[in-house]
Length: 167
Image 1 (spheres, rainbow, N blue to C red):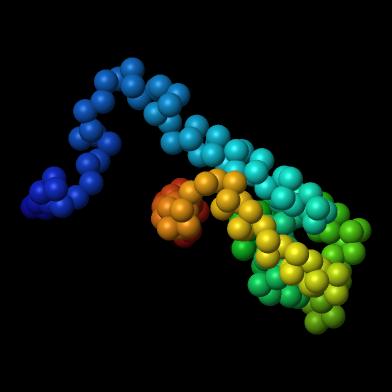
Image 2 (image 1 turned 45 degrees about the horizontal axis):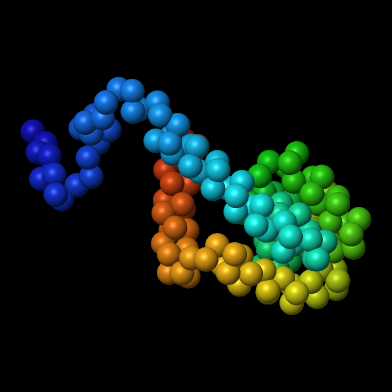
């Protein structure tokens, strides 16, 4: 027989939380609502900061991926950003048209498309170093608070995508 840990030693399960049935469907009680509004609000803060760099927020994420490792395959970028190739392809085309990246077939495997930074794309990284401090300033939160939030969000992401990793 499995014994439950004392309440102080574990988190309550959904069934154990005493919530009025009406509260379950209140908009303000929805995690999905809070995440959606927070996401839109934070991304909106990035727009004026990224505009001088000539980047949209999704393009910025692609560039962050490439500043970590270039060249990279489209599949590797997609895994890093958790984006499908069909979503990624138009972003890459625009970044290529802007002169920030190149896309070439891998000579060893024609099915693979390799994406690499151009010199202009590499130089843009120096300008982008100013983005995080501006966003932190705009949010008005302590860095430690943002680090805790990021950790919690990664836990949520892992929990929400766990079923996709089960074979």
